[in-house]
Amino acid sequence: MGEEKQVFIGDTTLRDGEQTAGVVFSAREKISIAKHLDAMGVHELECGIPAMGEEERNSIRALVDLGLSARLITWNRALIPDIEASIACGIKAVDISLSVSDIMIENKINKSRDWVKEQLKRALGFAKDKGLYVCVGGEDASRADTDFLIELMQIARDNGAERFRFCDTLGILDPFAMFEKVARLTAAVPEIEVEVHTHNDLGLATANALAGVRGGARYISTTVNGLGERAGNAALEEVVMALKVACGIDVGIDTRRFHAVSRLVGRASNREVPAWKAVVGERVFSHESGLHADGVLKDPRNYEGFPPEAVGLTRHIVAGKHSGTNGIVESYRQIGIPISREEAQELMAKVRSTAQRIKGPLAPKDLLKLHQGTSISLAA
Image (cartoon, rainbow, N blue to C red; front, side):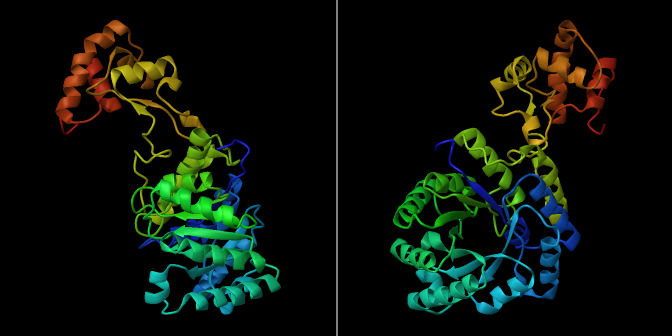
């Protein structure tokens, strides 16, 4: 993947993220999330579904009134009333979604491929007549016939759409299949941009997003913390850092803000962010093993692919069963108690046995008690 490839992030926390079972954002929370994402440089925010009702439309209008730098886009069925509802909110960009796999065409909407093509022409024509930026969303594209997808992309191109959204709606693709499918689509219809929208049912959403980019996609759909239906979507923080660290692609987003926006969305969604969550978990820069802790203390690059400050986090040296001398010295330094290597060696056996007994790392109060020669109880 070349470093000059421009990739855009379209975050759908406010739409697909809120579709997580049991998640509801208040209007104030939506505004706060949008402001955070905009401030960090996210390119596009999918901000809701106007056809849901007046309350949803009011929250979208409030976002429009913020005058954000990010493009605001709404999700719509390929129905003219849906698009009209988006226009009434002051929206200038729409995603027009159609089911594109035979299984959904036949068993969900009870229509035909020809109906899908005609509905696309009708809805897209209306949207373009109104001067809208249009992304055509292919629901269940990962299970659709590729030749049919190419035909739909050609219709989208010929009728003025700017983008086609390839949705792995059920999260069933592997990265190799994603690459092959997207590469074929981008080669067949190079005049229209491709977006990949990936779900995490097999734990492959981020990997599939990167594979889509390698296949030629220039847009990636994400959500903060990977929030989304069922197992969630590709996580914004994972995608952006993976592009930067693994692929050499900097999308221009201020990653130092990841920790803050992750906590904000975690609170708003009542979905606590796990301490070991990739990229933004509070403890993903924790080191206990003697060799690892020693290596990090000598040069963090020995065991960290990127510094914790890059995502708004801090490093922790943990005192526990696997601690070595230097790690114990650092653990005490972190709580304001300087000790020598000799003292650390004397304490090491106590630290290890205590960790074994309490089945976990030692808290600052535990370290203090050991230093003072006080015994530690399990209830402490």
